[in-house]
Image 1: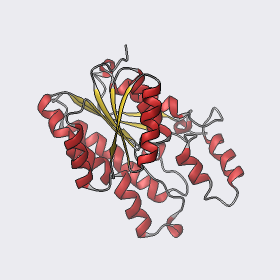
Image 2: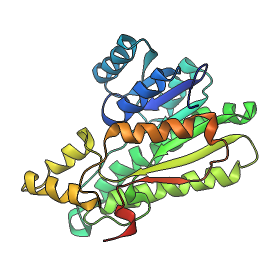
Image 3: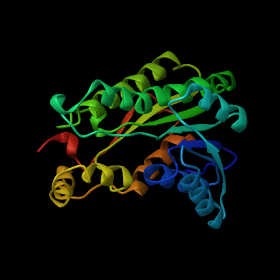
Image 4: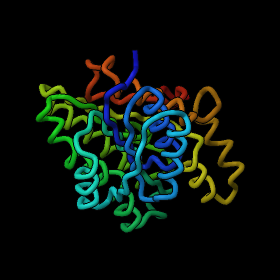
Length: 251
């Protein structure tokens, strides 16, 4: 039902965490997966794990901040059926602990990055009148998250981009959706936890934010991406799929 046979996919930031989980699951479901990452060693490790499991994968070097890098990836990869904009970075801080440079750094990856990839790959999807674009946003794209000013700003922007793209191209057969996870237990969140004075206390607090008392597993986000990538979700576009353990309903 959710198979991706004969589909060519690309996942940014696929060297670890959510990106790696998505790449591995897509390959298990029959897709050809282009593993895109700024870190060749991490990307190669993901490709190896795909091939060991019997799937098809290849690495493509990509710095999402650079439009020329996105264009080079497109020239190498060719046409895509599914684009997953997963690469993202974070920052801990309120207004007093956030500089303009912090905001620019997050914007370059979290907003300009997906835009660069969409600009590079989506025109051919539009010509073919087929394709699925999945943007990894965050609970911070629909709610304000305390002491995450720059992160919240950029993830709200990514959700807005997703909706605008879906509206502008609603009659083309190309779909645009965002996944908005809560706290995911992976390298990204662990790096944020390390920035706190008391990492163990921060870990407990982050887990407790979800109503079910635990963080989201990368594989749970990957399952949502599989749904949005597959033909079974043909009527889903412009959506923000929350995977947050109930965080968004309040406490």
